[in-house]
Image 1 (spheres, rainbow, N blue to C red):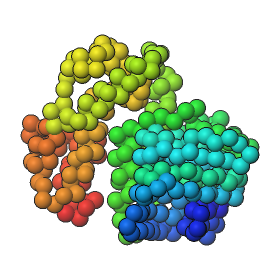
Image 2 (image 1 turned 90 degrees about the vertical axis):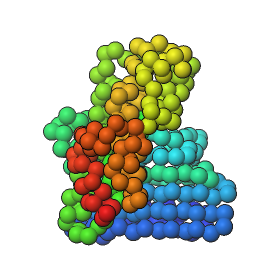
Image 3 (image 1 turned 90 degrees about the horizontal axis):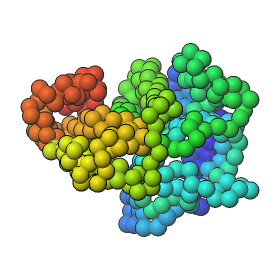
Image 4 (image 1 turned 180 degrees about the horizontal axis):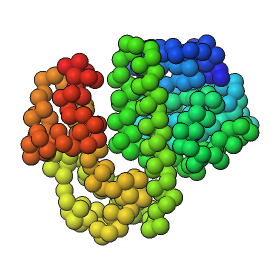
Length: 328
């Protein structure tokens, strides 16, 4: 698997997974900050895997060209900004959209990305062998995909991109903040997190496919559901009740709850819980804030309640998480 990417002037990435034949694990961080242009990237190299994170801000849009020689699977999470993509001999199409994710298996190709002036994305690029091993962890339940890999067929994990859940964002954050100190332990860590992230994608897809109460939402109703999401995000410390949200966006409570799960793949309660914990992780980076301060900012009545909620999502209390992730 060979993957290259470059802008109109400079090649900035060449990845050949054939050089990573053992348990080697390497992390590289790149930063550029000049007037009118700032960009940061993180690359994590392992056997059969390239984890890529990029955050970019410039005064103008950018053209990025990419070439892959061989088949690869890509877990794509577009955290900010929309990419228009052109493939040779095909009409332009949009594949990377703001706050959406998907996983796709592609063959040899050259792509041109018209990137916005501001964007943020996270990718996990996998060799066919690594992706096949990832699917095998689900004991043949997704054998259809494994068969398509053997044939070299192109496919998307789901027919359309889905919203990135708060849980996915927490896992991505865990990956980005992990310090590579031991090759073997770091490889185990990244393997586990990639499996967890892929599992979140599958869980969301299966939830949508198995939901017999799936409802059809009009464009107006979808807009109201998104307005409800905005209300939750703007009021994490004093979040409104479902009845209050229902009145605010002018949609009945039943359709609000069912529509929210249809659009975001989870219930309002679980969405709120995971987004509050995601915000808590951001606040834990600040050594000037103690656990009581963070609990108060997020609207918890006391630190014990906050710690129980945090442990439910992360498996450890916030103090331990802070020590392990941020060395505080």
